[in-house]
Length: 180
Image (cartoon, rainbow, N blue to C red; front, side, top):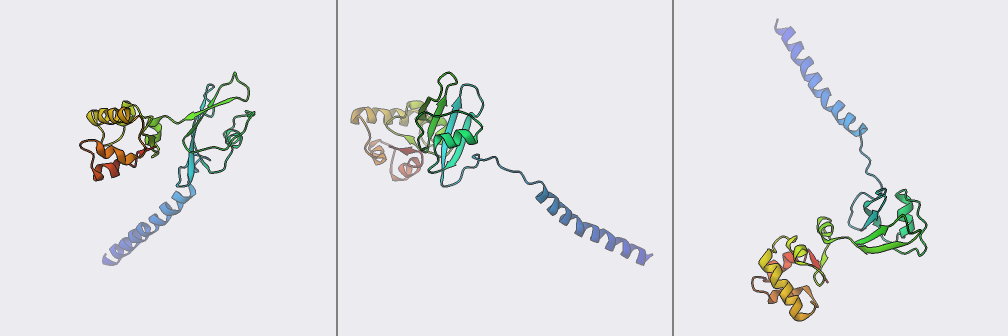
């Protein structure tokens, strides 16, 4: 009786030892492929395409040096650009099906910029934009806007230390979200 139980235990242990190998190899056979231009890395540029026809709209991450027509072709949009140009980080391409080959160029809106880990321009930010930044409430946002109005424009982000309640530690946190 004891030998049968021992053989049964050995059989169970062998099965339990083999199961992880099957799980390991099965997981590698189901690899998920990330679509081109959908992966944000350190050296990529974030470019948004806004299309009136909804096809190809979205945020794409490209390498530096890529031209607008290359990105549009790789996203499946068959648009011939009259004046091709190099893409820049935070750029927004606005396509209109009615204007053949003309593309309006703008900036990714500040909500998306913060979500992507990009900075927003302190001299152009509205109160709503400033409220998106962790550590800035309504009172601080109003103080920043009053100081900007008084100075006409900020020359560096460090000028925020003139506001009561913003010291070096808080300024260091805010610099992650603000630029000029």
